[in-house]
Amino acid sequence: MDPKLGRMAASLLAVLLLLEGGMFSSHSLPPALLEKVFQYIDLHQDEFVQTLKEWVAIESDSVQPVPRFRQELFRMMAVAADTLQRLGARVTSVDMGSQQLPDGQSLPIPPVILAELGNDPTKGTVCFYGHLDVQPADQGDGWLTDPYVLTEVDGKLYGRGATDNKGPVLAWINAVSAFRALEQDLPVNIKFIIEGMEEAGSVALEELVEKEKNRFFSGVDYIVISDNLWISQRKPAITYGTRGNSYFTVEVKCRDQDFHSGTFGGILHEPMADLVALLGSLVDSSGHILVPGIYDEVALLTEEEINTYKAIHLDLEEYRNSSRVEKFLFDTKEEILMHLWRYPSLSIHGIEGAFDEPGAKTVIPGQVIGKFSIRLVPHMNVSVVEKQVTRHLEDVFSKRNSSNKMVVSMTLGLHPWIANINDTQYLAAKRAIRTVFGTEPDMIRDGSTIPIAKMFQEIVHKSLVLIPLGAVDDGEHSQNEKINRWNYIEGTKLFAAFFLEMAQLH
Image 1 (tube, one colour):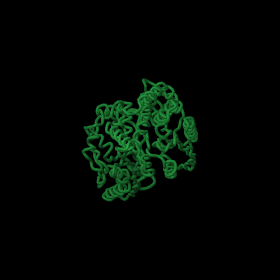
Image 2: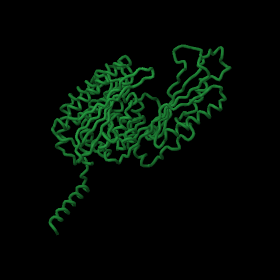
Image 3: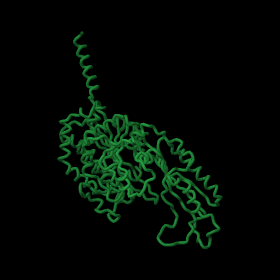
Image 4: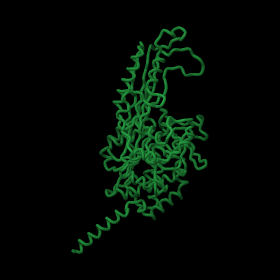
């Protein structure tokens, strides 16, 4: 045999043997480098916590449209841009214009940060999405500590934005900084898209993503979001789907003014009575939605999917106690998870125009607006659901023979999102979790809606994964929001291991 051909055959055989022997197992990560990176993260964890404290101190509330908070948002985005520049990233702060509010005032929208680290064509490119705005917080609303002073108690870091989403954003940055500090090449090219208006509906972000589809996102292979929670307190998870949301209002009107019940009670079609009947026709006491056809497009349940739910760790008793609920609608873990994630749900949220103050007021509201929403699942379609709901309410209303006027409106329509869990980055995330936490992750969906996930999927057409860092009891959006120091630091290691796994699998 020609010696050159012999060497080629031997090389090919070696490659095949390596592949068969599990070359791509998590054990193939360079152990010396992993150990150095993890050691660096452990040694510098107090610095990482201090940085989180500095970021939490910025009151970057995007929900309350007042100039002071907008100034804080701009300051937050500037601090983040500076942090990335000091890591060596090429940073662009994109001017997003201004936001017109219903009362006529105009407020500037904080810039969106687009940042890039590395452009090696032989490496994969991972883009991380995060947001640095927060929900409103006031110590008088039930916080045990000042929400804008990160306070550590028993390993728990309390502060607004600690878990949603400043902690996870910093964990990703910390992972990058560990490689930089150790003078190690980043295993993958990294891009960042960081916004400051997520809690207010990601104002103007979709237009930017569409505009950058063939520029900033053109070289992106994978997108990572870390903006949700595990389903347990100690076991990590990977999220591969979220429900959508169709939000409705139904208005019933007799006249603009209210009525006195002593003068008009008994001779009117009362708007509140009509509305209560309409809302009561939507869902039964077992949670089953009564709108005809609503379940027609729901994806069929497979045996493989049922086994996924069986494998998830969920202590029902702990879950019920932490939720402070006496009894759920369902008795088994599998039923609860399926009705949270893969079946639609209908929730009634409130009534506008009704008397809701303390005391007794004998008033008949002249017009009332009911508010409800349906969480959508694959393969439900927003426009189809809108037609089904409208037709159902019109049928129910017509049978009441009321002289009032009824108007149904869908004010929000967001599609569900689901990913292919066999994509490369899902495998990389699983392996990284095994490396850091020594366990298999729970493969979960999220019963809420993360619009950015579906936006990226539809516009950019890249594989997307949600890798949460926070525990189920972190209390995002609530009083006493926190992230555990353990989750924050081990999450930083998880992202570092994820970079290395992505490099091997790409």
